[in-house]
Length: 209
Image (cartoon, rainbow, N blue to C red; front, side, top):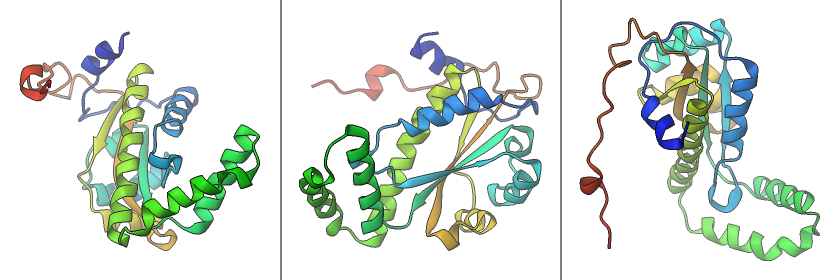
């Protein structure tokens, strides 16, 4: 299908049928998330894949017991870093040097740019910026899931502090930013499965200058 057909096919699935997403499809979705754009290339977030029934039951109350958590196959929790440390910058630049087969010393100018871009930000601004990067990855994951024929429901309806505690994120200086439930639609019990997609008209949404 074309990308527009995929976007017309997908919707925020409300009820799922319990069918498991195959590992190969999950792997493709996660690889797409890994390849998503990220400002400065830092990818300042970690993705937790909650698969086992026991773990999904554990996190379900923090996500207000929405049915997709237990009816679905996997729950992806995009956890934004609480900070960007010197160590995380070092790790990133080491990765760049190895991947591109260049000396690490040649990246000192880039290091200065990264450090300069975050130097003036407050801790709250850094956390917000990190969460925005996670949302970019979420969007790429949504399209990848549709291409794999997997239903995906992005969720902001959860208690971040409770979810952080359930996953132990608070001990790792991570903070749940957004959740993505994966599975397969239960068309018989989901009233939105056959409902027309509703979006603003392109002439209302877009201003061309």
